[in-house]
Amino acid sequence: MFFEVALLAYGIDLLFGELPCKHPVIFMGEFISAFERRFYGSSSSPPTEKLITGALLVISLIVITGLISLSLVTLINLLPSVLSILVLAVCASTGLAMNMLHSSVAGILTAEQPKLALSYLVSRDTESMSDEDIYKAALETWAENLSDGVIAPLFYLALFGLPAVAVYKAINTMDSMIGYKTPRYFYFGKTAALLDDVANYIPARLTALLIVLIANDKQRAWQCMKRDGHKLESPNAGYPIAAMAGALGVALGGDAVYHGQLKHKPTLGIAIHAVNRHTLEQALAMKTRINVVVFSLLIIGAVWS
View 1 (spheres, rainbow, N blue to C red):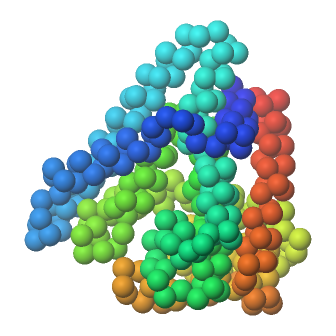
View 2 (cartoon, rainbow, N blue to C red; view 1 turned 135 degrees about the vertical axis):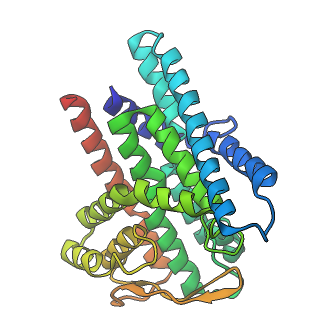
């Protein structure tokens, strides 16, 4: 049944995007913020205390999310079979973000203030970016979040059902809010960051392989993924980004400014073409081919399961 739910959920997300209700991730974010305000302590707290407090946050949110989602599934399964699958799919669609991700990145192409539009999508500083920097950051966001927002939740949904998607989104939300190597979050967010690395290990590599599969130059995309995928500090993000860079024949990565500090990062891919507006349009046009492959795999899974 999980594959049927995943198939319907993906279709609902593509057709309707975010549903007109308060998104579950917002509730998760509110819980994280409230927990941090209540239990973080102070910046002078010992590292061990911050580490333990952060781990308790992770355990608390995962347990709460798991219990709520399991209870919800139990109630939904009381409905007639066809209706229960449909309701589960609607709920699961809130964990998918292909529609929102594509429209958000595409919005940079039409935004009156591209730097401002980009600042809502990335954690790096955008004020001093050149046009090339803007398009590079947008490409990297598109590639990396294909894993976080699409492939990873589909992977857990198809294999383990709605509770697994809910727990994955909880982990991913914690990482996005506190998983930074800043003085405030280095210890407090360490457990969330490590768990996010584990949760995304397989999905990130599946996303990279998907990009290779749909690339016009598959050999180049494969070679760049193999050569450069491991180069970033993140054990996962580099793989889809390197595959995307190879597919487009461009160089991504490189130095960027985060929280006012210049961070040196390796270059991924090969600079055959310049990174510009057309490059981003090419990358976004991959959505159709991605949908074909994803729907095909989900249909095969639904038939065989």
